[in-house]
Image 1 (tube, rainbow over the protein chains, first blue to last red):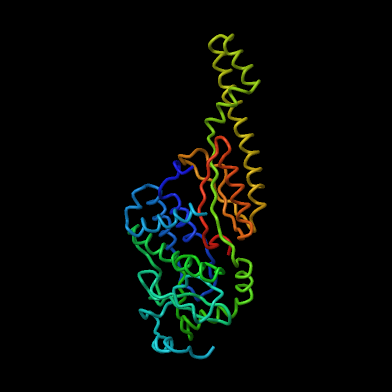
Image 2 (tube, rainbow over the protein chains, first blue to last red):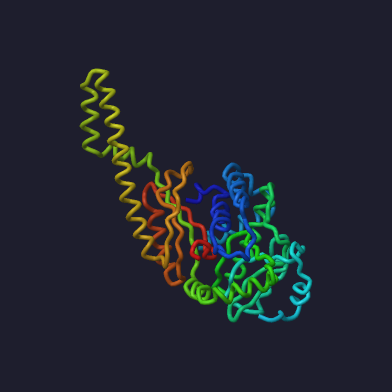
Amino acid sequence: MQSTVRPNATLVDLLDRVLDRGLVINADIIISLAGVPLIGINLRAALAGMDTMVKYGVMREWDEAIRAREQEG
Amino acid sequence: MGPNNDGQVQSDAFFLKGDEQSGRYVYCIAAAGEEANLGTIGIEGHRVYPVVHLDLCALVHDCPPQPYQSAETDVIAAWVLAHHRVVDTAWKRWRSVIPLTFNTIIVVGEVRSAEENLKAWLEAEYDSLRGKTQILAGKAEYGIKVFRDVVALAKSITETSLEVKRLEEEIGSKPRGLAYMYRQKLESTVSNEVQRRTGNEIKELYDELCSCAADIRLEKVKRGEDAGQMLLNLSLLVSPEKYPELEARLDRIRNRDGYSLRLTGPLPPYSFC
């Protein structure tokens, strides 16, 4: 299966979750996020389009950490 | 509520609407207390510290009362990964966290500071949050995508199906116009059979994986993957004692002819709160 895994696939799975999931506070104590979900759309579009995302140092570090963990598990 | 102890008194004493540091960016709720200082691991190196209510805390950093926004993909990615780093660190340390969605920022109210607002919210939601941390305690989220080589499946159907064999024979004996119709019939016979079989396979896989999960979420199947057709896209919440069973089942699926899968995790339970 390793051969078929795209390098940033796991990263996209992770970012998807951080952006789309997690508890949402429904109260007027949070800042209104009208228009902000665009942040996720931009990011996902960019990730889907390019495998070179991993070139960013921070991304490589995380990608390696995530994949190392994936292989342990 | 009352005033906070130590360092937080000062920052709250000066809060103003729109103040640079008046907002509280919340990463997650953890079953931890005052000791939960994670240091400068937050977004853009911010100091992450706990806002405590009883045996729960919200892990936060001080921020301006406006959402994180950027057109730069690498900037956004770095923020999102930093959010994950905090949640992940807390989750590994206390095994019981409720991740919040990215960009959750508590702001100053009419009469209360953001910190007071957050504490009031923790107090009001305490029972529900406590219940969630108990359900999630120790469990991890896994993303599982199962792919099927449908081209190989179609090929094997073509080679083994009696119906297909019969149609092929008829094509050979028909004039051109009619042969064309038969060829179309043959194609739809094969694709219907592919659908029927993968449909059954999806049900079986789902049941198989369901039995080792505390909770399960059916995710959207995406197109355009290079590993074949995505049959199933799941998020599973798995307790440690069930993990070996999950692993064994995944191995079995992986070893089936024409199957491949992608596993992400263990992750904090983003999809189960």
